Length: 240
Image (spheres, helix red, strand yellow):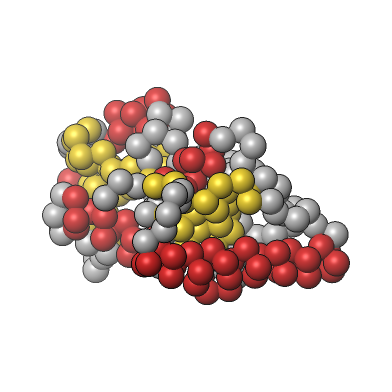
């Protein structure tokens, strides 16, 4: 399937049905929704620049990013319809559900390069399947304008583990961006802050052989391990 096909020419009955069901309703619903917001919050009204179907979210985001006139966009995850819009709704949350599942995003919500955007987590991520030691993994992420991945909660854990399972196999150890610092082995993030989300496995961390200062994610638990073993790793980019 060719992604993000522009809806032009004579519609098929199916496309016409979808258009009537979604595009027609969405233009009216978005307009009404905007008017309500305008009257209550004095926000900008969105102007549709283009509309595309067969369009995954990441393609929708990238197309808006490449269009200087596009400031925000709507996307239907169920119908895979993308609406590029001209104005930016100040003060809205990063995404907002409106009628029948259209989600609103600002232009800033995209991942460049081969990073993948997870809109639920507001996370741009990339799994590096080539093995590196921990320090080299950190450097590789920084070279791409990213940081080695830090998990913040169980939702992120579940998502990242699903990626590991599908790409390199369930149970594959991957480096996480946290390591032990000092004689007291305080677990620190790459930015120097103390780690707060630490789902250790049973009897971990055990500092086996006295040099297990890095953290591996295996399935849904953390294990301490030496930092000089070649492992896959994740990088993350922050939505600016």
